[in-house]
Length: 449
Image (cartoon, rainbow, N blue to C red):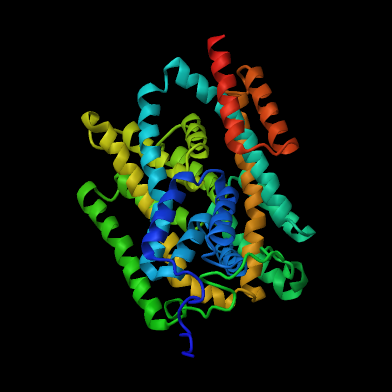
């Protein structure tokens, strides 16, 4: 009997062709609703339980790595699995198709929002959705907090982070850096605080042999090699630097498009904890500092992001689109193209490093995943993210319930919609899309009746 090659997936099960994988990733890009939890659940059901392309153990092994990385974990998980099956091109296809449909959809919806946002029907829909988004962010705070705040130290980090951003108005990057340092220092004296760090464990279910099974050797292309890492880093720098230089040379270094490229590069490196974690940073920059859009438009953008497929962080495409339109960056005659270019620029610089972290970083992280000196800072950062998201929830509450500020009237109808969304999410665990849809209908009813 011929010995099975040691660097290929399991030959005893049906092989997965590149075309089969391409069609699945394309479909996933259009059905990936429900945020990261829903998207990961869909991938588990399809890839582990039904198609048997990867075993549950290997699937969750990859997921744990992606949870430690900055960036959208569901999109990175798709990239990881595509890369594991079909090398770099497989990872590129999986990751790009996870994002591309939502980019096109958001560009279209953003234009509809700009052109028809003042139409009573559209305004009514957004009036109902905004309170629902407020409840959704509070629910996200609860979910992430209940999963990550496992001891008093992590609770202290979360409270300190909330105080730092809510009271002291400290920038998000400084909070992340401080939390990481605190976690590292605490692990030196109290390693037991991080011994049960977050991680997904495999169940006892056996779904049968898989294309990439538990015992399938690591493919050659997935093994860490210094020359390969150097090549990937060089390519990544070129793909980042050339667009920056082109934007700076054509538009100027202080132009909004160039500033978007710089700003969302920093945002991409700080997205520990997912989209809800980086949204406060995006708000600080896009709304307060650069003025690309208003606070109300930011909430509307999150509402659109919640109702479209793809990573929730794709809300940044809405930010880029409105930045291009609001400032007429290509002139008043080309508003759509100005917005579309802004959305594309923002998406490129937000997701470029998401791919880099998988292609260049996953082999390194794989070799250090169980070392406390790497787990502790990331665990503390996740705890800090809880406090930051709570600040975001309070920010949304203020703008939704007091649209003219505390000196204005309290919006009773918005408060009742928020309460209903709270009950649906916290008491009955209703799907986010249903909550948004029902809230939109209520908003329409209030507008017309």
